[in-house]
Length: 314
Image 1 (tube, one colour):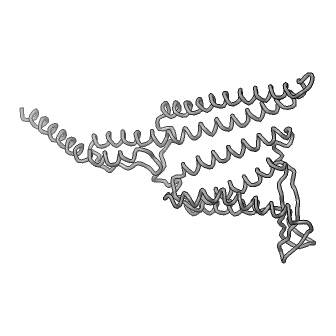
Image 2: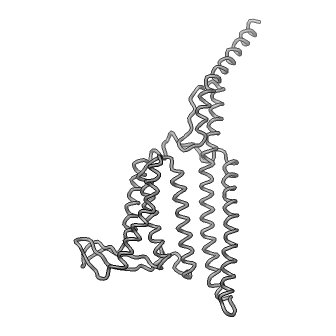
Image 3: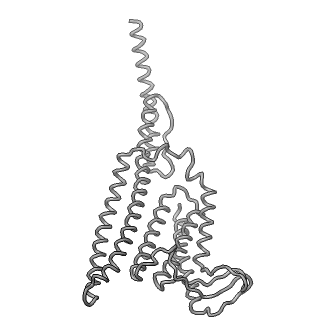
């Protein structure tokens, strides 16, 4: 990926979010009645439902906090996938950006106003589609680009010649690496959780007149469940990322060891790291060592033959 490509892909996220917010602002301030222009209709509608029913039972404050955290978590996942993709595949990367921008647009509505603004229709006055918005429409474009990118460039992501037989090429190192990352994330989650829980509890106790137990149960119990759910999801993501990153470092070393063994056995072959691996410089090192190892193996073989001949003649 060139810098220009990265700029194009990343800029789609704030661009989609900004266009979505501007169109919703227009709808909220200028739409009053149902109007149709051909197959396209406009009507102001606010959807208070939560995404797939999630966060619906939480108090408003916790719902805002949970959705904000969920949005930040999506950005983290998006950045990780963009970094780990081994191929340029602008269609797939752009599709992910459109998806994220659309999701963040609707999440912003739920955080700011508690409901998503829908204003677009397809059909006629007699029969039309459910109301939707720009973010919803652009997400479908994103889905299409993602599917197209996977179909078109699938062989670049999972080529047979680029796949190792196992993802745990060095289980001890990779497991230690992954668990270390998870442990660091867990420590941070514990510190952040203690701070947020303590701050929320002290705020409730300070604001409520009289016994605050009922308000604490109303806010603190949902907070704990929500925070644990987000934290567990975050830790699982860190473990998967740790496994992938450790594979990119352990894999080249594992392959280099096998290449050395093959060279010592007289199996002369070039050394290549796989797409997405670290330690690309091992290819240059192997190429410089290759003639020396081949000559050393040949000399050892000749010396062995001379010794065998001397023993036979002796």
